[in-house]
Image (cartoon, rainbow, N blue to C red; front, side, top):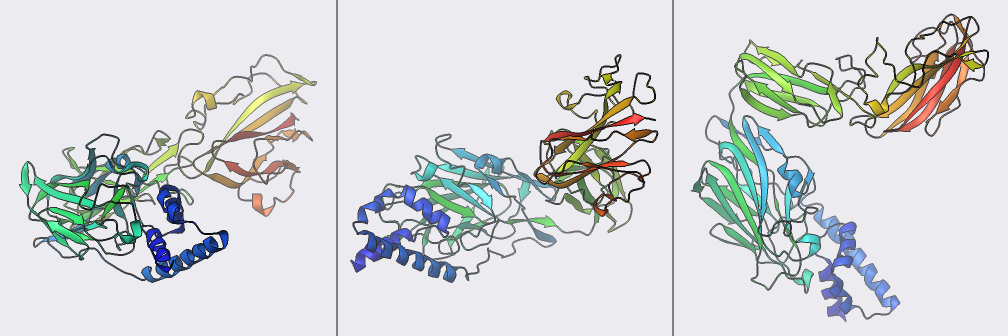
Length: 542
């Protein structure tokens, strides 16, 4: 019985280091159920032992600290420059990244021996988790769909737009095989690394960093049992012999210990390439969500991440590309003096530019920092991307005389405001009824109905939205005429503040002037992205 307990505990101490991952083991490793013939009391004791053991193991491993290879292979006058890949899930998402490192474009591609049947696009990803004992972001490469054995092989290729020197040995992560922790679930990692400069092969040297792997030429296999992701028990260094513009990692199931019975995963740590390091000038700044379309980044207007910017020289030739970080910030470093233009590509279909998308930037002094080249975009539809924002459109939606609508004007069609393009950028389906100016003669005591439409755009929820609209001069508020639709949680029914009534502190910054003729105020609550509604009220002409 004691030996049986050990075997079961080892079977559960597999590659997974979180409780969530252990839960997945129960669903996919059904063979372990053969070992359970205990009554409920013994099963409870077993579960307690497993849980206690796991807590102790995680506490021990969390103290491990391991770094990737840092040997500098760059020639004199060059410096290691990291390839800043971004988190992504699935081979297509990884392959969609083009990473600009100075003037070198880096991208990834994948190939399968059986298209669509080898790579697991949930487990293949770039994330910030520790893997092979090295902090992320690391790339994980998984073969075998839904935890099943892989029916073939797959290749990850790293492509460079021009020949480069890898700044330090690359590190393959967690090249291992099954062991006592994986009773009955055979697998073995087998990776072959190739490098090319054009069509000419470039030699590579692989070196096992632990006794748990075996290197033969440019192929490495796992020969010892698997490890937890936060341990460096099966890592391998890869050192190319010279310049290259492509690296291939052929990943296939090894059969040295039997036919594989489950999926397999290896990793690749982030790496750097060698680039010249001459002193030079800098161009950059921010791409931002210009909510009010005034072409200036005001307080509260966030940057837009992952926007592509193209730097061109005075002849219009592309010099470099880069992308903004999560805060919308970008920069082009180490530039020689000259006249440049920077083009900001539209982030996506949700955005329209509020500034020119191509701006000039002239560098006239050594080491100059020109950090004023901003680009503004604004969302152009309800539910568009970006930080939550509220768009307001005010219409006259009715004119009433003696209790009846005044004839002669159609208030049910969209009439654009000639003095404001806030409504013009909306698609037709999102333009609302009403007119912007009264097109029929009115008399004293006629009532005018104003409707202010609100549209929530961007991502997430706009919280604690407050509304204020001053009663027009020459008119008097009609009591009990406030109507609100589409408000969120925490909203009220709105109220009228009589002339000269002091505005409450929460409304002093949003009412557009002095309350000399009365004001309609309301708390619209928390409004979700894509929702719309309105506030309407009537005033009588004096």
